Image 1 (spheres, rainbow, N blue to C red):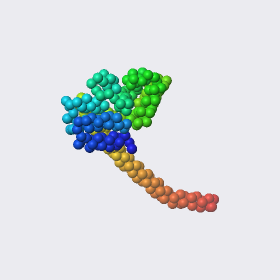
Image 2: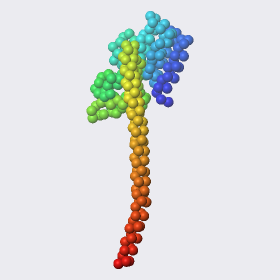
Image 3: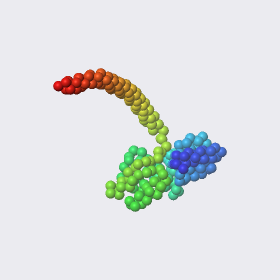
Image 4: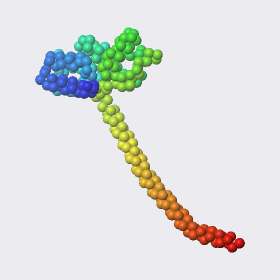
Amino acid sequence: MDIERKQSELIDHFVKQSSTLEGQQLSNLILEATSHPSLFAFSEIISIPNLAKLEGTQYSSSLDLLRLFAYGTWNDYKSNAGCLPALFPDQVRKLKQLSVLTMAETNKVLPYDQLMQELDVSNVRELEDFLINECMYAGIVRGKLDQLRRSFEVQFAAGRDLRPEQLNSMIQTLSSWLGTSDNLLHLIQEKIKWADTMSEANKKHRKEVEDKVEEVKKSIKKLNNLSRPTWTYEATRKSFLSLEE
């Protein structure tokens, strides 16, 4: 099963499960969602109406944690750990995986030193094991470990939830892409039209050449037919003259 389909099924599961929950039960649901090894998108869960009821209650920090998993990184958690719930090992691993995705959004070559600093990893072996076992095997990134250059070359990275402030930028990017696509489609259509016109012109020219060749063949044949009797008469006359001599 591909990662997008798995994500969709898990999101549907948590959204439906939350419809009758409240308070501590919703807090437990958030814990389950942020610990799940195959879930990496949370914005649809954040939009669940029931979750908004956690604001201003003793469970509001669970909602803040869910927002962190949707948009933040491991460093963000460390900066705000005092006002957020303590993380279980599965959540720590998940947040570090999400941190790699965030880094891959803007850079396709991630230096080992930067990765180790962002993920609190002490050595290259531990870092490479994490990238292989927790990121590439999980299907959220694909890439090449370059030990010589001490970097991870990203070939593919799953997208994270869009932060609210990113929506306008994304809309502009998509609008620009749509405009470029329309221009490219128009150009392709013009090329096809030109190719069709040239094809018809070539067919017409070929027909004209073939017709002229046929005319020339007919003319040559006609000349041959006209010259054959003359040649026969002259040959016969010469033969008679030679006999008289």
